[in-house]
Length: 270
Image (cartoon, rainbow, N blue to C red):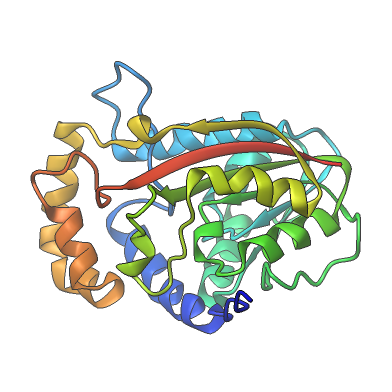
């Protein structure tokens, strides 16, 4: 009998209370990887993260008047990108109180507080009624959820039939479990997503392995590595020595360890 994964809500909250402020200070407000289209070697990290947000918006296909749930909203930048794309009402959730405070302040500054709100909630126990949202995404947040099947069931529960779900997530190759490096990461294999989604109540529309597109171009990597070296002690305190060593390894063509992949998924609530 398989043991039920233990909750790591408080540990993840503590990590992102620290990491979000640090990341926003030295890099940008998108707490996710970048996407460089084939042939693009010049886009900055900030431009590449914005490009990935655009791809997620296209997968979600938001429409005016919809109620959208951002599960694992970070400090709000993807939600603001989504709000620019459609006149939808967006609820962003995170377990980090500091992320909520920062995202809420930014929403007010942007004049979006009426349409974009942020709340503290656990994705594996959503405090919302059945069928109360028209769309949702898990934007690089599922990787922190030890019980991914439960998180997907909860997403299905609060979505109306026919609602879109977009996912951006990290996965590991068989035999190369990246979660062994950091205790708050629980990656799965690429072929595990489809059955999990189907069992949760979704119809899978598209699964795309975009690993080659998140590899950081050399000139961008040089700049990011210099930033990391400048703030190395802070990175180690937040992410751990092994993760930082891997990210700084000059032999790697990405800031992630070998065997780590990245996937974009579109599904529809049955």
